[in-house]
Length: 84
Image 1 (tube, one colour):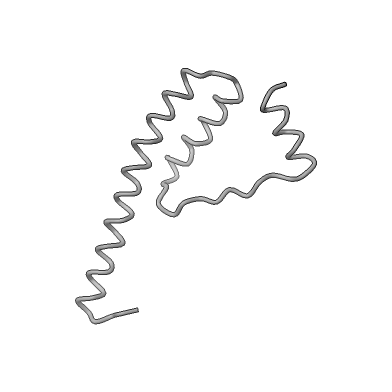
Image 2 (cartoon, helix red, strand yellow):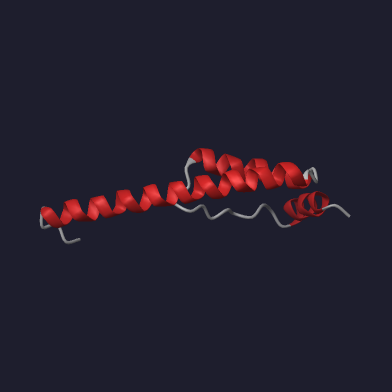
């Protein structure tokens, strides 16, 4: 029995699962997640592994950018005595 068939049946009966998206993931990185899921449903392991490597690199870069922006905002607020 295929994972996709089980997932499709579960979506019909229970409804789709709400994805909790991390705030630091860019739209491109999120699209790679969807492509990876499609490759998994098609049982294309080579493509899924390739996309997994791309996802890891982009997610790491997105997270570093997010944390840098957050740190810059905090430093700017501290300089303006905005302690919220």
